[in-house]
Length: 301
Image (cartoon, rainbow, N blue to C red):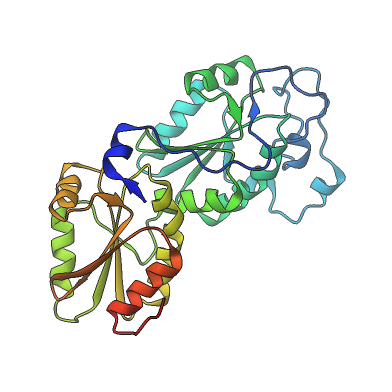
């Protein structure tokens, strides 16, 4: 759990590190391009990679069963100008940026997962910045205050909403789902009026409404959200799932205060226009148990 005031006054929390620490970006590149030789041919052998490296696609890369380079949706940018233009072109879509380095084993491990994720999430824009590629990319990293790789930043409407460093594939998937979800059965609420409309719309069918209240920069909120999405699909006939980020705007923050929400994530259980209870925390099993309890199923902890 996280106190709301703590999140509003502090920087986004760091995620648990991988076994190996993120690699500093700004030092002499290794003589073996450990990242680029494992990537698709689109990124291998580029003339603008660090000088002194001879880059060729390995046999394993050439025989890969992945789609052709033209099908890959990860866009590599080479300067601050290209970066800014990509953010503008994305408009209100989620943009995920990976800052990688030729000498970083962690970057090498994470990049294939980002490529696969880009194929599955057609409404999300994925960018790659090779921090040690050139002076232009090094300057971009300095501007964005990124000094280790791999580092992921998330943008919405050109606003930087989240940062992660040293994460694994599962957490990357969770972050993309949390910040970019627009097609799941979880209804996205952006104001008190949205909440009131949702509640009014389900008075007649007496369905239980599970309202997930969180914040943009909330690690526990991100952690539990994939469970919320999964439950929304499995229980769509019986339960309505919705989500609100309290720090999205003033209306959302007033709603949190009126509902006495002081820690996130908080799940409000609403039926027939009344709040029947709440669960505070990110425990997956506990959340499922609370939902079943408010559905009339006896649960023993």
